[in-house]
Length: 191
Image 1 (cartoon, rainbow, N blue to C red):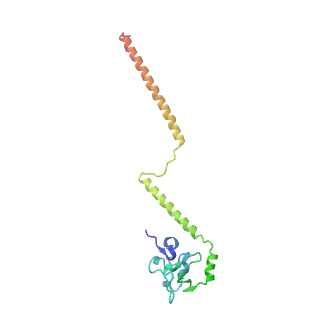
Image 2: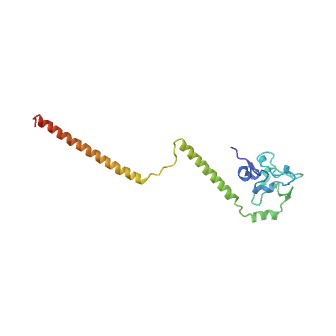
Image 3: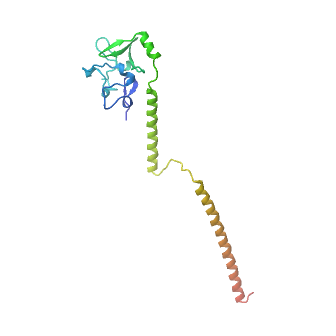
């Protein structure tokens, strides 16, 4: 399975919605124009990773491409040459130097990183669980079974008692053998 990235290296599977394919990822929403009357200029998740991705593409003299989209916690921006732009409705407006600095000052944490980490950990845990189940089905249980110490104690006692009874049985058999040999010798008047 191929992971498709939208503009700003946003993973399509984890940052966009299948039920709302026209809502852009939160970290790059300002890289897409938004005109409710014209769906042809906004975000479309089916175009992610293709040449038809509409990030940082406007009309007139503003012609960028999805690689110009820089994600951030305020919705991202487009960098075209040495200028920075954000979408405001159906046009791209330039960001002043102060606006750009304020984006970083007031950045804050939107918990996107922790959400991404949690998703990655859940995905990794799911992969490990599936692998363990596969090995269990094949009869190669990778999990080390903890031995029950009481069960081991019972086996040691059982083993000791069985060894003792075995030795007693051999001893009694030997004594009975000697007595029977003596009886046979006495009956034959050899002794």
